[in-house]
Length: 262
Image 1 (cartoon, rainbow, N blue to C red):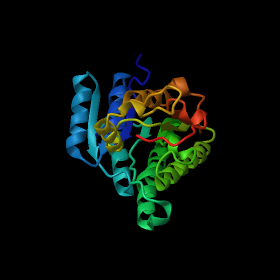
Image 2: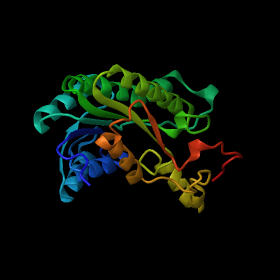
Image 3: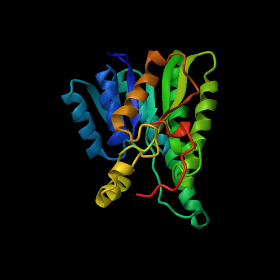
Image 4: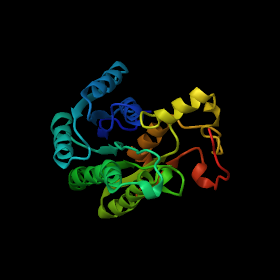
């Protein structure tokens, strides 16, 4: 199925993890992908993998938290690939587990810059082009940890909760057009950002406990998150906007109890 045939897609944070998996999935569905990120080496690897699989991709080195660089990435996509119909604002960052009363303003500012401002800039700079053409899909990467307490570090969870609010407000900024804004909320998924958790569990021989509080009793895979993003990018989701779509093994559907210890 090539639901994204001929569409131009920007994916931030495309050098690794969910971003790379999404670049591969979008391209497999026919999209022309612009992989955006801070590190040229990993972006080049993503593009090479897309091309090896028969897809079309370019890369653009940019920091998703810096407005001039996001604007330049959008302009590059429109000029080089001929347009822009999809923007997956996947780039983000997490922080360390620090007791709430010991956290710093600087750490909070970093989390909002990396997770919320990057999402806002995607909407701000992709939005006008999409609104003018009357069509487009913007997907923001949030987190299941944004929904309830103890789903992640406090600053990270708060920043992702702000992304949820941005999703709903941005969807309503495109009233009267076919431009849609949605968020995907991954549960625990092995990526560069979560690698230390998985490595720690493996070292203790307790990897099987990861995801143990979910109804599916497992963690997620980057390809599963990419599949949700591809759905939201496609016309299969043409009547879906302003929504927070959790891909979390069902953990957000319940109230896990007890202390989970690896």
